[in-house]
Length: 260
Image 1 (cartoon, rainbow, N blue to C red):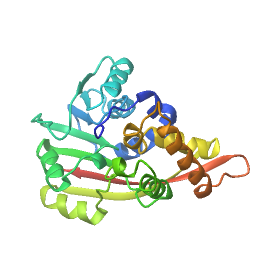
Image 2: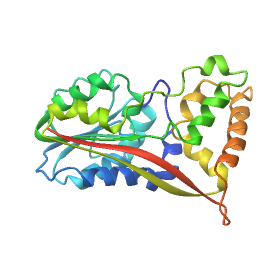
Image 3: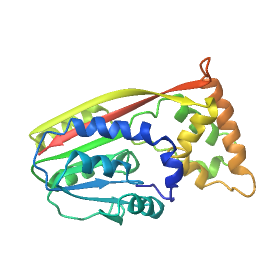
Image 4: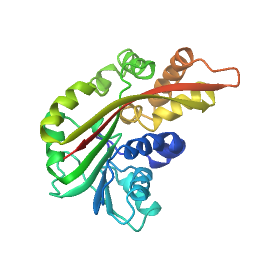
């Protein structure tokens, strides 16, 4: 799932092991059930779909994403599954689904007060909505993005690009508990060791948070390069490398398993 620009699957999977670990942890908390139908919302290049299918052997699994590039990558990776280009804000499949997975996607989608209940309505009785969202807007990597985008020749064009939608665990619990038999909410801070210092941190975010910013900047005229250099220099200060050159990147994530 993307905001308004296509993403590059190749960039996203540079850190596939690190990006897939949270979805494994999420699915491990989904109550055991004889699931028959499951869907992966914002499936990206298919790494989360692959994990979902392995967790639910025998289930009919499908995936959707608004990025053609991501869907092409998912189809190459998992030709046995159905993948569709679709925007979550207009997705109207009725279900019912035994598991709806939304891994690192709903943070890009507005109106959670309406969206989450609408997804619960698509669940079969006993089915689960499993959600993982980055909860890192207060981390230096995002704070620096906001500061650099607001201080430069690109300031007007980048105004409002940074995602600001956020709610805490209590908000989601209060929203979902009246609709569900069980709601499990937790927050985990991963510490990802990235070899390559500040450059590795920049490469990480080029596959996610940086994408909407870079999409608004001119590559041929050097704007992208100038923005990235400023960001890289700031990242080097905020995330000093260890003695072996590794940067330990803290990455908080919010998890929700809501069972109907």
